[in-house]
Image (cartoon, rainbow, N blue to C red):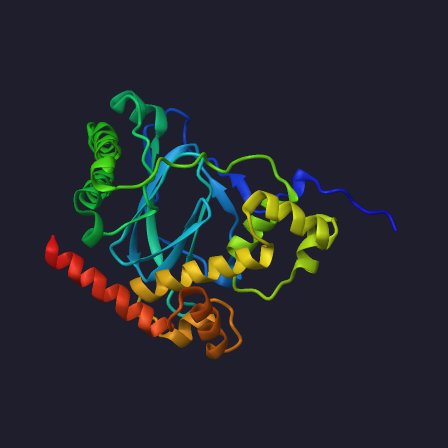
Length: 297
């Protein structure tokens, strides 16, 4: 049997999504809120050549940006730099999340700001956590709906202020280079598992997708990401579990189901092995710490 070689043409799921506007139009937007898909309706991980920000109008969801998941709910803002792979989804099949998104021409912001500060901005900006940064994005979103001659310049200025002030409010490392790059079996599997973390799939099936052996995939994935494909999947599940435990009101049983566990007890075992405590104890500890932080502000 002839084996097929891995081809970058099967890279999953990372593509450039052009917007239906002229290349130098400063600001564009979704006129209406759009429904974010549920797990069964996965869209492809994609990126734009513009700054993107938005607001969650209703419901709750997960936002994936450069391999990191963030939870969001009604009123939260999202922010994505140019050329950054991202994806958003609802976490409730019966009540989908709706959001509006806005897009700003990157050179217009650069011309206004000069050098963009090297700071890693989280994909989700929450009102209670990020103060002024949240207010600036919220004002930019509201300004987008003002159909006057000064609208575009005002939105660009507000986004420039957001980027300029981000280092003052975010104590994080400089951002990593966007992961828009040539496909390899390891990157293909990383992207696949990032979206399909709640599915039952093993190394054998993943290797078959890439037309290489299981041992080759394990070796290449370890070299690229420092862990095995299944360890990466577990790490993704743990990160998402922590986001949902701290930032949503989902029950532990619902979170276990969201993550694709066959039983709540399996989720308990995985989480306790990774974090040294039960999911409910983790939720209480983190929320207690958040309350203490707010008291000291």
